Image (cartoon, rainbow, N blue to C red; front, side):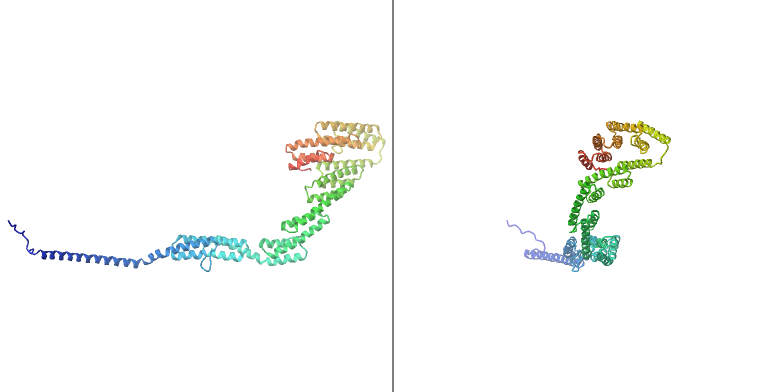
Length: 521
């Protein structure tokens, strides 16, 4: 059975026509939609164009200036590190940092770079001032001020610069004065002489060539004077000139030769002093040894010669006093003091002189009656007995047994009682010496020994007694030195030298004393 065709709506009798209708509507819709898209696209493009116009500078800065700024900052850092703070060609640190700021006024690295450049300029101003480059210092200071360093720091450098310029203004006048003084031969005799003036100039301008040359010439003349004085034997004066020359220029070319000349002169003077000592020319020997010790204080030969001279002078002073040659005794006592005699030795000489003067006055007394002489003699004999009981054999001066005996001998030298007292005092002085030595009372033993040798200068036991006492002084001195008592040890050495100058143990003890930091009185 044939099926009936489906029902078609109105107007759909022709499928082709219906298709045309449907497709035409779609294209219309597509075209309408396309127009809307293009309209939005056009609006977007217009907006982008407007934005590009409005933001063209920031974008240009971003894409173009940023690499340039970084390059400028790096170049500024390199210039600052190299010390090229400013340059007319624009390659200096200041110019690079300023160029970076011109591109970006808010760039903190550029501002810090300028601040660092200012600080470097200020330090450069100080350094150039120290090097006496006043113009360079002024230029660096001006740059520092332009870069706004702290005003107080800049003002301080400015004041120093002004002071240096003011001082420099008088350099010419000082140089003229120094040259005039040099021409007049006034090398070093006050502030207005050549060497001090040259030194003043060099203190202000260390590289001042005329001042350096002038000082060199003046020192050459001064050292020539020193060598001349040394040849004449004036060692102290020559040594003083050498010390002054070292103060002015320790590296002067003529110094070694001058020092050698002084050393030769000192050695020659030492030999002269030793010959004078052997000939008992004590004044010449003393002067010679002292002169050598001024130049060479540690010279052992000169030290030994001075001590030997001192012993000889002390002995001569004592003998002169006993012979009533008081002026000679006093001169020798003064010479002994110059040679470094201890206080004890000086006191002994003074006591010896006092006793001799008392004895002379007693001898010069007018004649007295027999009865009066007897009363005075008995009085002296009683003084002797009292001094004996008190152990006052030789001290205190004027009240010792020895002093009373001398007074008694001056009144009645042949009186049996006086001879008996003298005979009694002699063994008593020996016993006094032995007793005190056993008890290590070396000071008292020395006083007794002096009484002994005064009563009997040629007694056979005296050399042995002096040797024993000298050894005992050293023994006690060595013990005290070990305990750190340098003063007593030095005094012990001095006493041992007085008693026995050639004592074998003495050099070793004195060497110990010097190493410990002490010295003989």
